[in-house]
Length: 212
Image (tube, rainbow, N blue to C red; front, side, top):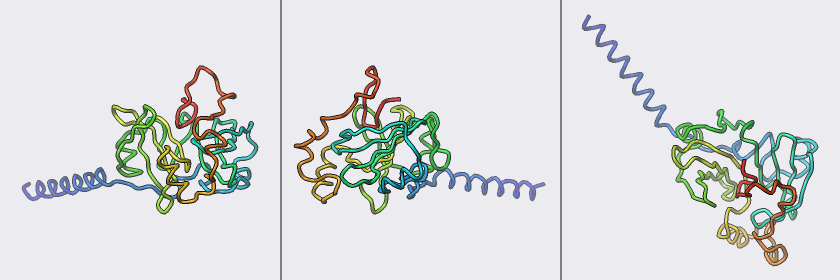
């Protein structure tokens, strides 16, 4: 009896230690997290067209200080290509339908987000809370997770290499990023000019696009 009890306690302790290790283990971002439906940030416009097919329509706009051509698709996903480079720089998705790696979807808990992507400090941008992850060796490629300010569950997801603010835009310009050639701000009024003609007028436009 005592021997069996000892075995039971040992097994229980082993299970508890294993579960503790699982709970404490934090994930990390991988290259896949900076792609959407088979297209990576930085891929060419032709790759986007080959993999995503024909869009419903496209539009030219200034998005976070960069002139882009945005393709809008039937499933409400959008992919933006920098006009100056012809490279994909931004994805937005319909979170009611979209599922990312490891079953990350709208409503995913703070615990699960940290389990998949690792821990990072929340940032407050345009009145919303974000967890922002950068791709290794590509400091301006970002996975942006908009989270609830109270319990941290996932509200929205965006994948982008566009500057997040004026400070990052200045750094990218100093680095000679080809999508930010000198004179953009004078020609296009920087962050001020945003084409919202095709958007419902009773919706507010945020950093991540049309609020859903």
